Image 1 (cartoon, one colour):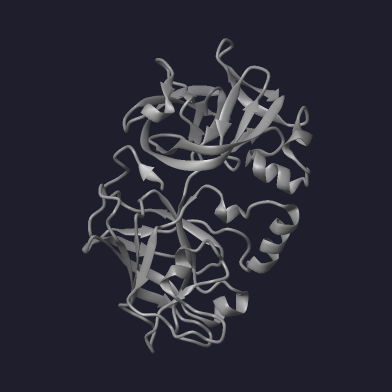
Image 2 (cartoon, helix red, strand yellow; image 1 turned 90 degrees about the horizontal axis):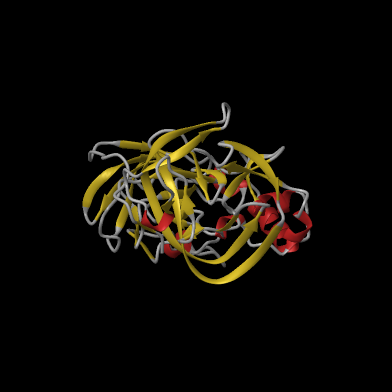
Length: 341
């Protein structure tokens, strides 16, 4: 379970509206095709990597099953983009809700509508605005985009992670055919480093597992190559079972496969995505071909170094990530330049 280990981000009033950002994929997302492609390549689907699925889900109402399909609340935390919760009222579901437990207020991804297919997404209604509760008290309002794929937001932090978060429908985007309102999936997401990672600071390196809100670390301006000080606003920890041990000539780090690094000619991208996009059969085929941006502390400048060694390691690992900085987005972990995202 992902959890916050620093007190988080900005404070919100009960009337504060949070707006979701971004979407994954094109305006039409064919999940069946994506699942088949990942399965044929022998890879885990991207939405199952680095995620924190709520432990339990329940709903105020549920649409009755239709043939082999059900629309129960646990469809929103089953890690399957082809299933969905659909509320059971005869109108547009205003006032209906779903609730999830053991759900931390880190970066949260939600998949709006019934994304089993484009036609099911378009024909059914989607959520425009939720009223969000924590333990029965109003936390904020959340406004979603009317797009397929995932979109993300950050909720105000709640100290008690066992509390239930309730998402009550306030406004909807009307479907072309049906008033039924659907949500496909909701989960937290974070990609991380192991505890033996040092974060560069202008004073002395800080262990990533000891970071606290307000700690001052170094951030690199990629355009100018200059280092500047910034402060940690939000951090997280999570259990992972697969990591990569990545080495260049001078640096080594252990991180989750989807954590992005700055790769020459590609920009900010994870080794997982780079391998998939270029159809490498395994990570070893990337050795001496990929160059990663690192920080040369002696020369006080960034430089590219070739990927010399990469090993996949399995087990149970407590991992850590920086989710938000006061200024800038980049930070330096064991010499590797990376970014919050």
